[in-house]
Length: 367
View 1 (tube, rainbow, N blue to C red):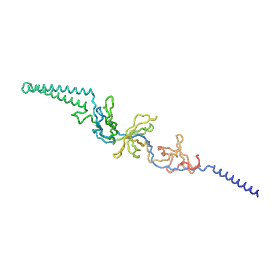
View 2 (spheres, rainbow, N blue to C red):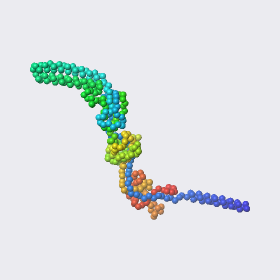
View 3 (cartoon, one colour):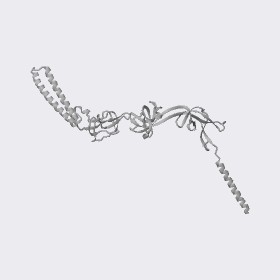
View 4 (cartoon, rainbow, N blue to C red):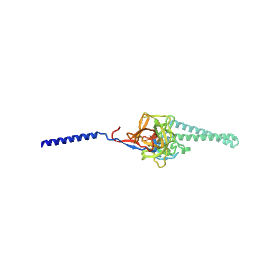
């Protein structure tokens, strides 16, 4: 009985061993290799590039005072719309003592000259009434008196301008009032009431009271790499995307390509500008970051294949065309390619629209 038990146990272990060996052998055998098959399609291919940049107004003007002094009033806030000539702020003049002294001296001298001219005129007037002085002499002294009076008025106006920044004769055009030189939106008012300001001159740019821009005339400004700038031409259409406006897109037209490169992060970049088409309902702010999509090249209604099924060997391009007569089921064929968008590629020759092409491997190991 024990002898039979040993034989049964030995047979059991033998079966388990052989079964395990067969199982491992079968598992070690490679699975049949299969491929997806792709049919070329007729479609359009566009080669595009994305340029990063920002939106800014074409005309942005810094408003500066006509005189030096202290800001006493600011009538507008950033974001407000102003018309050309509208008052933004008021400046109180701090007169220069040398100029003030010179203006006061001019008034005194003009008064002396006027007094003398009036005295001379009164004398000749009495003589003229008695027919003792000619009309010519009378008119000459009358003109001298009028000129002296005009000089006195001019000297007083000059004194008022030096002292107060405004005179009675030019109150409407007072240099103490800072006016906008264009119609547009106030982007910034960098001064406060009480700040000292100076006028622009040869040695100083002057203090900026406000920055005003026409926000209905906007441009996109960005930089493009030297490898792509050669494909650009003025007038090309662009699509502008502003992320801050929930990915709204705007049409734009390329209007400027810099003739000179600048180095940005070690690469040569060329500045471009494009006119952006906006309407009154688009609340675009100056300085928004934006992306411009530019179509560098485009072909329409051409035979296309996914670029992943193309084999490149040096300057040659191949595809594997389904061929049942071939030993492996595929025929290696040279084709001529054209434009690629990085996903699909144009097939110019070497392939017919009804032929199938070997695609990606779906099972087994790479051959």
